[in-house]
Image (cartoon, rainbow, N blue to C red; front, side):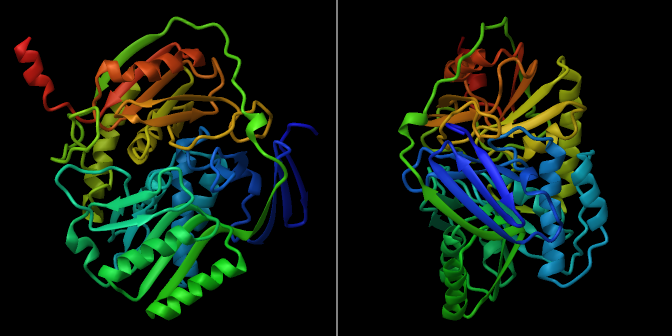
Length: 458
């Protein structure tokens, strides 16, 4: 079928034809929980010469809206798989978690991994910050941080590494030195491995400064080829280490570029605009601000504690979860719509997802992204609708939101870690007009430090 995305399958082989331009053939080799492949992802085409194809996750809440409980449960299932395949233990929570994943029912984070297992968990920005954090929630005794693309004022990262195929390649790690200066197992969490080069890059970066014996790489999907797997073995041998790999689904992927993609970029046809109400909500009384500011930022509000950007310990989880519950109760009272979208921004994914999971029925979650993707309104394709705008927190960076049909939601909560001024929000608000959402609520977690002084001068 011309200009469509089609899926054909034979036994454990699946072939995706994306926009008649990219053919992706997948042969599954591992599916330990027997999850339907169509529930985990679909395909789209990147606007990226380094890698033209994109696995669009149906459980991450990045490019597609999801039930937020399903995002949290995906991380929990990865924790179950880690216990089973790496530690060789049965997990009493497995059947309950699989049942909740199937039904999408409400899930409350449960630290079911005992305190004798105490790794350092690292989530990859920007896509896997929530996945890594929710995975960390499953441990009674662990530490967590996520990599970031942000540059922090007057602070040098302990580790840096590159992700070659990404739209934004540089990763930085701003953490207390004692969190990484040890010999504990490190667990790297990402949404998907195609080659595994990103994982190998960070393992080498860590090992050069903070060597240890065991690393584990956790991802929802593992598509490494035999040559890619040999690269892992070579690094194990070269460094004298063990690298475990954990996934919910693994197999081989072959991608053929059938023709160039330029002809497939299209503009969505938007309907008439609707009257839109705008409300500002402040959560700074629920969460704790740090002293850290971003370089090259259009806001002087600080980052907050509790995201994992600067490191978290399991001992603080109960306190953070209570803060989330209190804030969610406040936001739930502010709901006026029947069908609500909660939108995280960039790396700021976990807290919005967690809040969305506690805000009542018919609440969906997704996030903005830096990734430019070809738009095509075709059933099954991974980017049917799209808007683009400058990031309100940094106007030099373009952000995108995908797969929100006009009029589909009557209310949207947009979560910003740091408060931004109205002028910086104009490009985003202008684009949101296309989506015909009647109620827009802007939610901020930290105040601009100079705001009070400015008010006093006036």
